[in-house]
Amino acid sequence: MADGKPAHSKSLFGRLGLKCPNKHNLLFFYLPAQGVASFAGLSINSMNPRIFYKLFPKKDITSTLLACSTLGTGLYLYNRPHLQSAPTQLRLSFSVYGALLFNFGSLLLFAVAKSYLPENTNLATLVGVASCYSLVKVGTSYLDHIDSQLERKQS
Image 1 (spheres, rainbow, N blue to C red):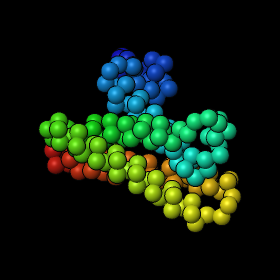
Image 2: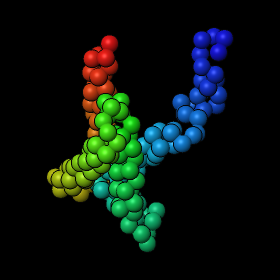
Image 3: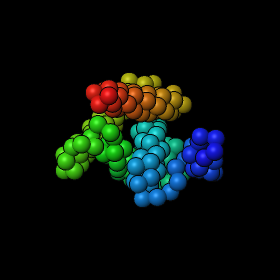
Image 4: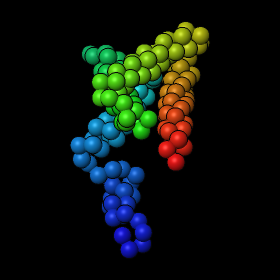
């Protein structure tokens, strides 16, 4: 810490942009990150199911991707600064509601978008990836903005 940086920033985890594995980071960093990966898989699977069918020919993994994405989203929401002062039951309710709304709303968006696209698997996959990126980016930016309003009120 001689150069003003915390000791963990020099660790392998810090250099890779990761957090040291512990219970809190597992629940509120790694599982939400896994949720984003599952959401990306869900968007691709919704737009072009043939890709995952080739990888998993005997199993439809849509429900698994949806469950993992919803869990990751819910944990991400639960840990946001603007919900920290809310009672646990209310934080849990808001997190579940937000996660379900985000994931099922996204599925609806994917289904509608797919119905308007021509039969082109490459285009469908591209639209899936782009919509996934856009939805996650706008959602996190929205939550960052809400949290920044809380920080302004406190200062």
